[in-house]
Image: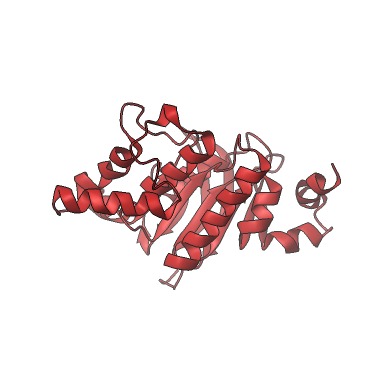
Length: 252
């Protein structure tokens, strides 16, 4: 296929562990500035797919293009340059416990930005203020709530002004009010900076609030069984498993 305007594209992708596929025949595209949710039952390979899309792991088969770069054939240098334009929030936020929130955000800046320590500090404080943590930047991760830790993780993911960020279960373990506030932050990042966002989630209210598109992974067939806007998938009863996935929380 020739290059197009998509920021993310995969063709007949297979992902898994070693040479054993968990999901295969995955083909979809994502345009810049959109939010994609990877959804499906627990254990279906959502996080595995996200790591491949983000260039952290190699696929078993197929092609994966990120920022127009074929991650399968890219050299180590080409992949490194691509990854500099991405950000990640892993499950549990993965903050360094011995560093303050500001120092956590400063880490990728110190590694990749050729600016003064004073400028790095100023940039880190700006990122934390952006996510509502201006008053907590000198706190350690152990001194803040789970919701604050997720926001700090997003601030670190945004440290290098990435074109695209990958969020693994950002709402997991949060109460409904905190989860809704985090959704508002995700939408704010997209609207203010045009950031493309790929998130893994099983929280249907959050998916419906934030995502432009969803890819549904079906463990029974070992592939994607739906791709489209979440509200469209919610209303489409032709695929019962997909419909039930979205509809179940509204009747519980």
